[in-house]
Image (tube, rainbow, N blue to C red):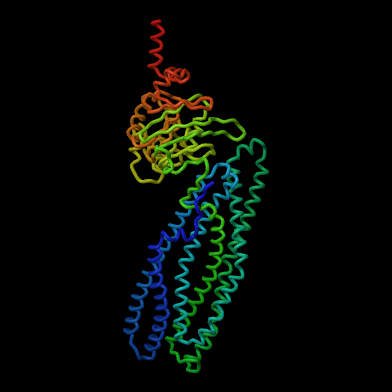
Amino acid sequence: MKNSKTRQIRDYLKPEKRVLAIVTLSGIVYNVGMTAGPWFEGKLAQCLHDIIVKTKGFQDMVHLALIYVAVILLVQLMRYIKRLYVRKFANDINRDMKKDLYHCMVFKSKAELEQEGIGSLMTKAISDVDACAEGIRKFTTEVFDTGVVMIAYFVMLLGYDWRLTLLSMLFPPIAYYIANRLKKIVTQSAKEYKVSAGALNESTYDRIGNALTYRIYGQETSRDQIYEKCLTDYEAKAVRANIWENVMQPIYLVISMAGCVCILWFGGRNVLGQGWTQWDIAAFVTYLSCFTKLASKSSKAAKLFNSVQKASVSWKRIQPFLTASGLAEKEGKVKDAQTAPEQKALTVDHVSFHYEGSADLFSDISFSANPGEMIGITGPIACGKTTLGKLFLGELPYQGEIHIRGNVTYMGHDPELISGTIEENILLGDSGDAWEALSWVQMDEEVKQLPNGIHTRIGNGGIMLSGGQQARIALARTLWHRKEVLILDDPFSALDMQTEQKIFTTLQKLAKDCTVLLFSHRLSLFPQMTQVIWMENGLLTVSDHETLLHENPEYANLYHTQTPESRKRQGGIADGS
């Protein structure tokens, strides 16, 4: 087995160099500029005193206030830019992580997914990635909003009175020490919370998916008890995790602010001319304001440690699932296009498949196709057509090799429609004209007759539509999102032959650069196929329509019984004899 390299945090940071450069520049300007606030507050307090003692006038206060407002506006502009790009940075990382995680999950077999646990995977795919990206966002934010600004405040405090600064700064490190000592508890509580969330998701998924089975066998009560147990455990673990993450914040703040007592005493002596240095009112107000802001930031830094520890738990859970490009290549899965022999668009090379505990459904099958070819695949019921189609998605393990140049678009025998509008089902979030896609499948006029037209909601699974309408919407979606290889499993089964032919003519035009595999029991279109594959008794016969018609009695019989022209021709021959 060959796996792609597991991703590291730095792999997600490298593509964001430009964004991080903007964050760094705006962050430094903003946080250094934050020191202007305490300085102006001190100057304004001094100005007010001078106005009271009539050494300055009101216009001096107005002039100083206007400068203060202008400086703060500039600082806040830098804050806006920094936060905007930090959020973009975090969103990009969240998107990239989920993309890699989803790709990795796609290339896992159903057995592996079930072994991992659907609930646990759901938690990893959503909650853990969100927590990890949020931890990175907070860390990036606080590097500037806490780290840089604390350094700026500290330097400013030293400039006013270095002895008092060293004395009052004895307290914030105590908050850091407590936060570090609680690291193990915070990490463990976060880990237990994630595990419990995964178990609850698993129980919820089981409760919904198997509700009918439990009802039939009278197990609803016992399953409800299990679910309630998972829910109770989740609530307890969530409360515990949130307590350790959030309740300590006020305690950190109180500890950090304890230095204010020293400032009030020794700073007051400085103003009176009895301390280590000479202060005026402006210096005292500036120093006290600057310290309170520094203490508040330091308490948040302690909380940041807890947030980073929580994010690290999520990172450890999802990292094994994050592989470069999400492509965990597996033996017997779809191979890279560059290795395809003869550079065919599609090559199936000695492929065999069997379900566990059963004999081969088909064995040692081989065929190939180029872009622009349309291949019709048919055979008796239960010969393995649908299973063969799913092999191209890498859903099932098999022996042999399948090489594909490009990507695959697949429409299954039972297409899944979302509980949204017709337009949403076709575009799936893309922008474009869904009416065009509806015209491809001869359904635009029908949709125009609906009360809300293309915005008509079709219900869960398309329950508001007929079977033929469901199939055509699914086909419109497939054609809209078509890739290099297009696999269609019985797309025309609910249509009349006239509509079928019109749609097929459009398909030929749209897919002229694609390789199309059309699995069907209906053979009216097979004379127009580039190749025809007959599946029977685990073997494949690869030929063309005319050759199969003369050499394969089973295929000929199936075709003649379905085609009116063939039946009429056969009847004429019989009458003439």
